[in-house]
Length: 135
Length: 187
Ligand SMILES: [Zn+2]
Image 1 (tube, rainbow over the protein chains, first blue to last red):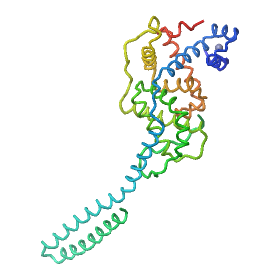
Image 2 (image 1 turned 60 degrees about the vertical axis):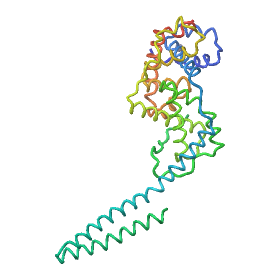
Image 3 (image 1 turned 45 degrees about the vertical axis):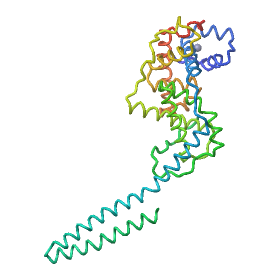
Image 4 (image 1 turned 120 degrees about the horizontal axis):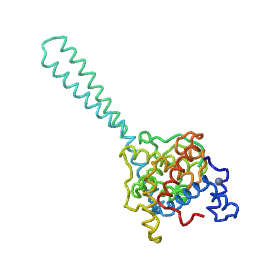
């Protein structure tokens, strides 16, 4: 069995209710059209009996606007959050560097500690300045 | 419904605050499409509450998508594509297979005035075919979509739609005859 050439004609008749005797006779004899008819009728009933409730357009629009604003605000806040976290990590590393400097007798370690402290403090200050500038 | 379009980003990263339509445009489009889409999603998932969630999410994603100017038919096709993908995501995430709502194996002999019974029986039959088969049947026979439009919504190749439709229709028709559906309407 293949899809019958008269299927569109049949579906149009099902929708409009305008049947010719010849098309009715064809439906009785054509297996493909019989399948199309029973399926289409069933699915139209499925559509007609489906839950028709939809929320009001105004409510959907209003919720979409709120959500869009919230998402935009979150997207804008993301670099600030990252900068703040980076500043916290850098400050922590700076403190570790300072401790190493204070607790070591080695000149080399002391020098490395000073350099690390200066670099990390500068980086932390930069990250915090960036975060504040974005707020 | 019309040509295939790119899918919108699903995340919120980098989204702009503005929506893709004015409120008036949205209201017109919503009035035209919300009820048919709700029916589609209700019958696809078998769950009206879930269908309402998916409906709102679909409209939201449409509003947030960066789309070129398009006619209502193309926009509707795009909306259905979003909704279909959301329903599929739901099926995948929950390994969801709708359970029979009630035990009503036959249509014949039931009170024909019981709309709730009929609706439940219809859903039980629909649940016996796969979700992607429901998509195909609905788009073809309720929405009256062309093979090209069905391909755009479902992501199938246009050439695959016809044989698939034929096979699923045969399956559904056999199921409906087995359940005694449409006996009163047969010639
Ligand atoms: Zn025929």
